[in-house]
Length: 267
Image (cartoon, rainbow, N blue to C red; front, side, top):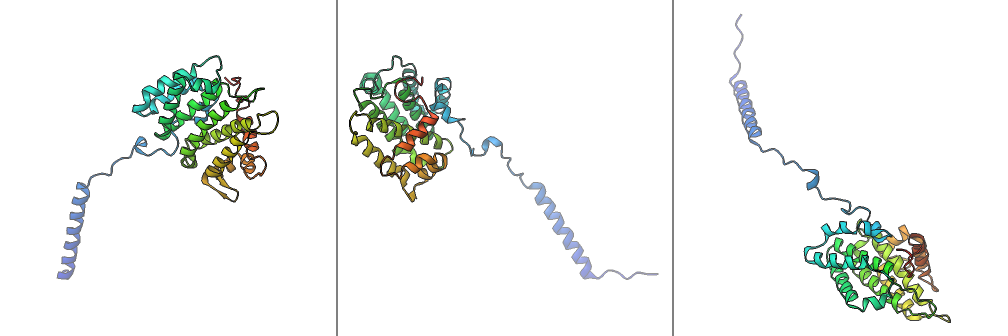
């Protein structure tokens, strides 16, 4: 029995489909494969320097050389020289006396230059200031000399003005910045309460103004103020006090750095 032949329309449709499939096969064969993204090509979400708070703690000398690879090239020579000096400092000289000498002046220039650099440079700058706080004497003592604590406070103040806002959401800098705030509160409170009779109002007012600037006022906290509230709630609550905005900061500092009080016992 004879079968009817296929219609011309059906035949043309089959041929057209075959042509489309052929062209598609050629395109697929000639297409370039997607580039592979290696893990090292992906931007890192976490800080590249592990546990940066260790670099502010007692024993920082064991790790401080790790920062060399992260320092900006134009700052590296000075950084190495100054870190070598301050980490080798002996005999606990008064802070201001040492800073006013040749080595101290070089130290301050290096701290300022690093503070104006990258986030890693900024961390290195803060490492130097914390080591200075450990290696020199800024506790007022019986004579109530507060210039040493105030000079340390000025170094911390300069750093906080430059980096506190940027550090609020920076995994590398947020904890070091908060630690700098706590130490600043301790140093300035010590200076404020140094006189045997009464108080030294100038460092207190200066500190209160800075804290309002970087953390915001009660009910209108900055991002940095919110970070302080999250990690050190007692310190943040103290900022709303109308009697002693520094007390909470010093109490929190005493928890983290119990012996860092300006007498070189935390070395």
